[in-house]
Each structure stands twice: as C-alpha cells, then as structure tokens.
Image (cartoon, rainbow over all chains, first blue to last red; front, side, top):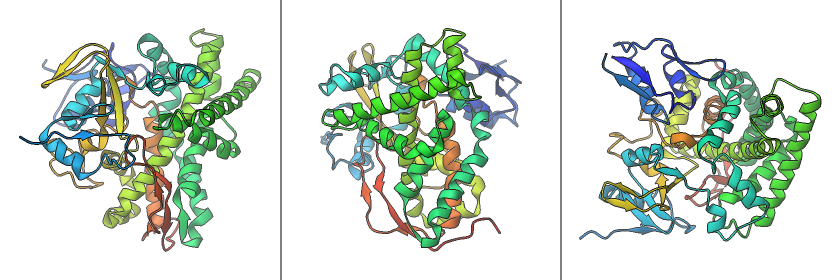
Length: 64
Length: 399
C-alpha cells in the first residue's frame, strides 16, 4: 500500500504534516513533499488520519 | 407520519445545540430552515463541505440583507471567504507562509508568556471577567503580533474587529455605520503599517506580502489591504469566542478541567474535543453552483446549505460514544470548516488555545461560573459577551 497525493487538489494546509510528519513535509515554498510513500503497520493509523483530515481530500492510500 | 421540523436560524431563541436539533438529526440528515437547508449529520456535512459543486455561501450575504453598494459590500466581495477559483488559490498561497505549522509552533513560548502575563493580572483576586480580561486581549494581541502591529494597539484592534464581526450578525444592515467605521479605521491603521514596512522592511508577514506585490507582481496593493483587514477580523473574534466556549464546556466537566491542569500535553486534544461539541462557528454556509441531488434532496443552483457543526460533531452515527472526553481520538471535527475554504489560521487557533487552556486550568483549579454572564444567541457565530468566573488561585508552575 502506498500514499498518493492529488497535487491539483493539495492546498498546503499542512494537516497531514502535523499528523504524520514522517510521511508528509511542506517544503520551504509550502509545497507538499512525500518523504516516504510506503504505508506500513506502524504508520498506517497516522496516515489514515491524515487522509481523513485533509480538507481538500487530496490524499489517498492505494494498492501497490 | 413524523412531523418534519422547520428551523428559524435567525430567531435569537433558537439553539443549534438543543434537543430539538438532536431529535431532527435522528429523523433525517437535513431540515429546512429560513436560510436554506441545514445539514445535521457528520457524513453528509463532511461530504458537502468538500464537494466542489458548492461554493462558500456567504458571498451574497450583504445583498441578501439589502446592502448593494458601499465600502462594506465592496470589501466583502473581495475577501478570501467570498472569492473562488484562481484568485482564491493565489492569495491563499501568498498568505500561507505566515500560518504554517512550523512558524506558529515557534511562537509557543510567546503565547505562553502572554497567557501567564494576563493570568498574573487577575489571579490573586480569585475572580475574573474572562472575556475582557483574558480571551479578548489574548486573541487580539496574538493578531497584532502576527500582523506586525505594536502590541499596545490591541484594544483598538479588538474594538474594530468586534464591530466588523457584526457583519456576520443578523442585524448587519442596522449595524452598517459601525461596520463601515471599523473597516475604515482598520484599513487606515494597516495602511500605515504597510507604508512603514516599505521604508523599513522586517522579517514579517506584511514585508513578505509587500515583496509579492512589488517584486513578483502577484498581489496588488489593494488586495494586500483587503487581506490584512480580513485577517484582523477573522482571527480575533473567532479565537476570543472559542476560548470562552472552551471554558464553558470544560467547567461543566470538572474532572476534565482537573485532568487538563495536570496534563498540559492534552491541550491540543482538548481543543479538538471542544471544537467538536462547542464550536463558535455554528453554521458553515455553502451555495450550490449547479443543481445537486444528494440522498433524496434536490438542491437547485443558487440553493443555500448550512452545515450545523455542533450537530455533525455530536452525531452518534459518527461518534459512537459522543460524551466529552479530552483523551478521546475522534473523526476530524468541522469547526474550521473544510474544503478549499478551510480556515487558514487553524494552526494559530489550535496552538494558542492548546497553550492557554492548561495554564488556565492549573491556575484556576476549581473555576466555576459566577452568575449567568451574557451570551450571544447559540446560532451563527456564538460565544460569551461577558463570562464572570470565580476560583481559588492555583500555582503558576508545575510541581
């Protein structure tokens, strides 16, 4: 399972970065970067919460 | 057949948190109101706020109240809340650096020092009028810091922001002279700051925005003025009211208040839980841009939908155990709205309240309301006007 971001929808609200900082990071220009797109047992809960919290529904978890 | 209720959202006696609303939510996901349809359940509320077939629904608010021209209607048409599409995305992105999590997290010590200073001012008395002695100066001084205004300007900024807040009230037309005076005052005041930063650049929001205007040409001077006035207005009143509502909820759950005083690390979760059950923005408005059919409801283009944030946040279908618990992890609340108009300043509000509430809980450990106080109607943007509290002073630092 991998994290996927629809960058046309992303508005850099930064909720994902606050919830799952090991996966999501806003760069110096406030554009979202994915640090690690792997969804594991350890980070799954945080990533699912980031998906649910994204105001513009820009994040999803997809099958490999 | 069950009677289908009809709500009058602008009746001062109507309460969005009342049993009538909860009972209606059990029956149906929406009800008709004098002001469009009200959405009562979490799943539908969350979906509509993110649905791009709807735009932010307050853009036509002045004309719906008979205000068709003038300073207020011109300003309203251009604020971040009213605009859509590319202009909205461009201005939002320009403002973003001032509101990013890292920038706001770095301000935590400053928020803490400010909260301590304000509490020190009244704590020995064992009583406080919470709005005027804490919530308003705290919210207003933080806005001054963010906008680069001298902090001692806060009473004037608070006064203007408060008057401008009346633009969301049901008596907006009658309040128009006050609203326009506040708009004019804030505009002039902020314009002086802009002129100062042109001469003497600093590492602050106004300087950054000036650079966007002068160097990159991505923002006009006029848009800069509109945006700064909007930020002063949007950030002060909402945080002030939400702090008052936070105390209202926490003081009616003394065990949670005590826990928060002992566990300041729960400040962030407490803010989420408070905004789920007792949000200051009680309706979030949307307007359909095309005909929309949703779960048996036909909403024509131009139709207005109000998401009732408390009803959605306490919906038993989404929150199986909806009781107030600052240690619980819930589905994301809708207190900051959602979709492309999600509150830009959410990290400021989250952080400043997460810092202040545990400090208040520690230093007013047995706080209780001292009389009924004075409250805005529990509909529209709500909160206390006057909220007297009594307590036995607690220690300043832990141990």
